[in-house]
Image (cartoon, rainbow, N blue to C red):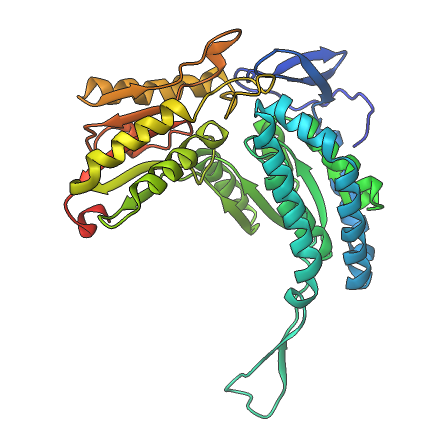
Amino acid sequence: MTEQSVSTALPLQGVYPENGHRTDGERKIIQSINPVTKAVLGEVPVATAEDIQVVMQRVRAAQPAWASRPLEERIAFLRQFQKSLYYHHEAMVQMLADEAGKVLHEARIEMIDAFGVTEYYVKATKKALKPQPRYVMLLPYRRQKVVRKPYGVVLVIAPWNFPLLLSLTPIITALVAGNTVVYKPSEYGTQTGELIKKALYDAGFPEDVFQIVHGYGDVGAALIDARPDKICFTGSETTGRKIATKAGEHLIPVIMELGGKDAAIVLEDADIERTARGLVWAGVFNAGQMCVSIERVYVMRSVADQLIERMKYHMEKSVRPGPNSDHHSTYGAIITEAQAKIIQQQVEDARAKGATVMTFSEPHGENAERFYAPTLITNVKPDMEVIQRETFGPVIPVIPVDSEEEAI
């Protein structure tokens, strides 16, 4: 991205999120701030309209030559990236912990998953992109095949909760398939994004095939207006709807991974101890800030009391929110105070409507407000917000049912 300061900065609307921001002349700056210690981890410039234009021109001009390289050569770049990823892995793990507020073992798990994803595509890409024969009834005496061609320029808009893993998957698959990539990390994951860029460049990927752009939602909107050929977005349903609408105006295809309200169903023959332990882990890992986090448990009424008692036990004895500096911590911080308020609002709504709210392992010490205690909710009703809306926090409602059909 060009570093020149220009006067055509995009207008920023609304209020800034809770990361830092400042101006340097006409250039707006995002400061990455540790959500627990408030330490400044780094700074990046917010992209201007001219920056976006220059970036899109660079990657579009580079795409035909990149796509014309043999597939084996692009896979070789990915192999080099594996080595680069390993070389930078300690810095990445520490940055994941510092920037996203994770505890170190959560950051290491994300790093291990990133290694696994990269290894998978090194091995699977050649077969996945191989031309595939097809039989067409209207042309029975002709040979037909499906040949996969790159889209062109792919825009990757990534989230903050798994800023390494959920960025890498669309980036490396787009690149190895012959596309060029413009990458906008979350404003809460700028420094992780910069480490991804460094690892790719150190692996030998040409700068013109991968460019990073920083900013808030208005920068994302401007990137879509710059007409990429495909968009990969991971994030909230609200933002996803906005992106889908805007992309639809330009007929740009979009791949989206949005939020969820994932449920577990526990039957009468379940191993209650193993199930309780697994449900607690699935509900509080990464402070519940996962689109695949368990946010509802439907359990057969005959075993509901047993399950609840064992979940209470594991929430009390096995789970402890806290900073990564405390080796006893099992999960980390809520990313922003605004997100913590959303969680608390849902819990208070449930309490006001008659639910029983049980909290365990209350956070304590410095900046305890940035952590949310593991919470179990019973006597739940279907109209409660904690059942109707994604919580994105370490909160697990348990609902007894009389049959599998009722649970479903």
